[in-house]
Image 1 (cartoon, rainbow, N blue to C red):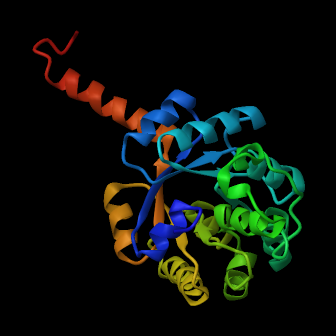
Image 2 (tube, one colour):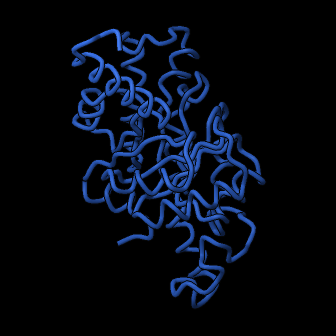
Length: 265
């Protein structure tokens, strides 16, 4: 087994199901752990979370068996270092365009010899007291690199054009497809059924398969999620927490009102 449940699921050929988290707190994170999800994406790109809150959410996810993935805002030392040190087991990096940006993400997130991550035995390593951190420094680096997955997004036209080369970068652990931004970058915003867009998704997935890394994608319905997993994607991040929350309560309220004897109530 590896240091990361997502790696083990991929190695075993088992699909992973997660969701995006940007509106809740630690208690809501714990609730998601009882829903049967495999991972959760703590969204610091669009969500309101500061570093300490993000760390608390990582801790809450760990407590209920969820793999905590953090989507950062950009490919920078500060963004990557803080997520890694706080215990993220995966980093999703958005909006990358050049091949060099993808290389930089790996370089900042991985310890030597794969990259130049700054050394610390922080919260994600039990502050240096977790049993797996014992032994030579090289062993700590190797296990840390195994624990932290670097999963950049392919959501720009530039990244799509170089996806085969990008997927083969040493130390890159997967690709996450951002359908909304990718379709917009291709000049067909929201046209997810367009042949050219479906071909782009397939190209990305095949590039990942050729490189031996997982390809993850967003799903927005139960049927779509199942279809994508059946098509060979390694995992789906299904919808966003605030969207699921609102839809669920809309359905509840509508159902209650629909059964009232006096509909004016």
